[in-house]
Image (tube, rainbow, N blue to C red; front, side, top):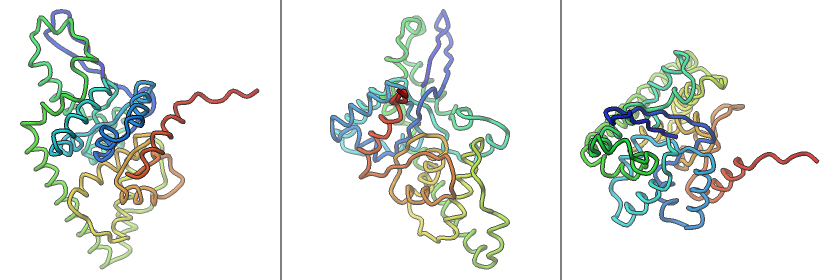
Length: 288
């Protein structure tokens, strides 16, 4: 959840981000489907959000939300507004996340994207006169995610270029590692040994394990796989429940066990996903 505190004279604002209950990560297909699909399922999901769930939302989500037909934009904007302040800006740079883990950071500090938060709300506050800031209802006026569509206009091209560069780097790096593995299979055990899951380093486990399996399997990587790789790491490591593309769900499911990663659902399973969230929110049954 994002909270905003404005100084008495409206001259400054401070943000506090917490994850107090369950965390859910939605790939963009799930945002669209929940926003404009079955109305009952949409209502059920939003009810879980307001009952103690936080949505992990990344800069990649922002870029992928731009481009659908106008009706879809309106539906998704309304859906994101209805989430209110119950969201957390998630870091897409998984190298940064892993480095934070290695330096002893714990969740949610491990995966919060402070840049996203600062940039977004700098724009949001810029349009509000100082004398009016002290009477704002932050949860209603500033912290809703629907405003992301207004903010992202000037940022869209640079975000997309960044994601394209991420794709290129990810695909090329994976190809280089496969060549090394084919030349010397023992290299894999030195560079990417099998890791046991550690509760204090879930992103490290997920990233290394996914890279290892991608090298071994030799899957063909495509456009957007760089961003999806990062989605899968953050979603699996830090959410309780996540919706991912089917091929990335399969890849996460194939990681070494036991682990305490998120329950992953793909596009045909959104009804089950909402039901699973509802089940996790139910208080434990008291013994007779």
